[in-house]
Every structure is written in C-alpha cells, then in structure tokens.
Image (cartoon, rainbow, N blue to C red; front, top):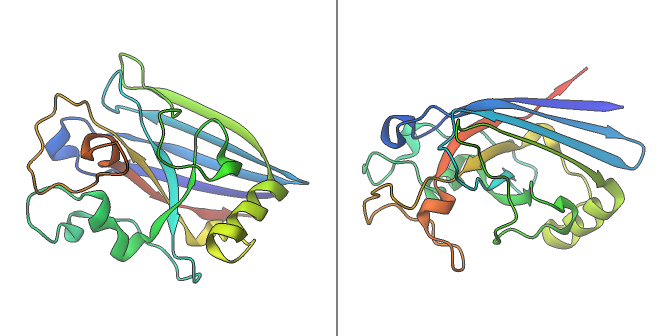
Length: 185
C-alpha cells in the first residue's frame, strides 16, 4: 500500500469571505485508488469542483499563492495557477477514472460549508486514461497539487477573473483552497 496526503489551505479567502481548509488522502492498494477529501469552511451550499493539477512532463507542481495574481485584481484565478501548478488533470467527481472535467457532478457543501468525499477508483482504468490524456501511466501523485474550486454565483467577481470552462464561468472555477500532495511512508 502507498499513501499520499495533502493539507489543504485557503486561497482567495480574503476576497471570498471564507477560509476553506481540509485534508485529502490517496491510498493505492492492489488495483484500487481510494480518494478521501474532507473540507471545512467552504462557501456554503455550493458545488465544489476538485482536481489534482500538475505538469504532464513530470515537473514538480507547487501551490499557488497571492504571488500568482499577475493581473493584480486581488484574486488568483484558474489561469494564473497554471504557471506553478500546471494543468487540471484528474477530477474528484463521481468517476475520477474517466478524467472528465467540465460537468456538474462534484460535491456540494452543506449549510456550514462542510463536505466529505470518498471514491474508490479502479487504478488500471485511471492509469490507462491518464496515459491517453497525458502520455504516461504514472500518476506521480507526489508531484501534484489538489485544488478545490467554487464560489456562489452571487459573489461579485471583477471581469478580470478568468476561468470560463465550457459553459461554466469563473464562479465555478475560482480556486478557494490548495494543497501539495506528499507521499507518506
């Protein structure tokens, strides 16, 4: 068994009015990857996209901070995270092995801003689809970061906040928390 963990810390908290935080664990055993994420103090009653991001070439990804706010609008948006964190790779939705990103099948926080997510994924299927998408079967979890996204549509965002993905606007894709995934021995 191989175990990975991430301590998830707030991002954009001074602008969104909550300090989302939590933990993620990833357990690889046999042909299964068990993903468990628990989040607190997220925007309430909101769907939260969650993914791991990284670089297809295996470069070590880092978490974004306010330093990535290149347009100085006070928000670190999805596009601004790419320089240090890479691209969106695997969704933590109802079927992570499918690597299907833009949809509305992600966890929704309760009235207190809490949600818990657990999914057991067929590792060989995930690896095969990961190889099709990114050229390698190796997930390299210890070179990835996890992002939690999503704020209510009622939150006023400046036009400079980028993040339109398909039919989903920046309210859906705005990062609210991030954590570096580390191997635990």
